[in-house]
Length: 116
Image (cartoon, rainbow, N blue to C red; front, side):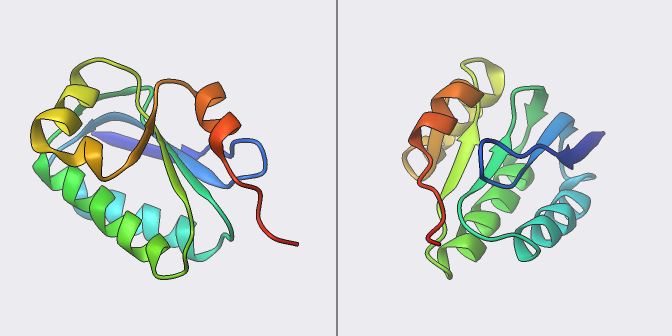
């Protein structure tokens, strides 16, 4: 079961996803991401550092989140250390579509602050 909590990074709003994301959790994850994205501005961070498993339905949710942010030209940074979850991104070809960072520090250094 996935757990989603607020996890801002630097000046960027974001969430941390923990546990496991599979088809049973995909709708809840999508709802949580949409709400967090809609109530925020600027770059957005999704921290998967403590995610143990993700399947294709979870990846699909992340693609939709990226598309939602893209409609407003908002940057998405995904914190995803090397390991099983990162491997799913790589095997699916999704690693080419997302800005993946191995740590929160790496992601923070790459984020563009929102325009004032």
